[in-house]
Length: 42
Image (cartoon, rainbow, N blue to C red):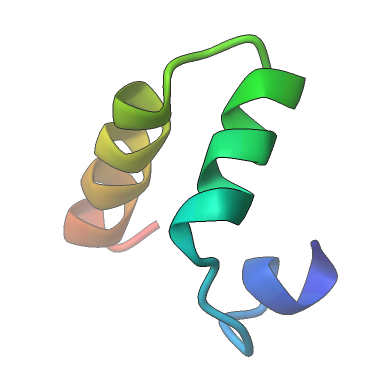
C-alpha cells in the first residue's frame, strides 16, 4: 500500500478489485475518487 500511496507502484485490476472489497466500495468508485484527487492536485 505504501508504494501505491507514494506513486511508486500502479495497481493492476486484480489489486483494485481487492482494495475495493476491503474498503467496502465499488471498484469504479475507487477509481473515480482517485481520478478526482489527481485532477484536483491533492
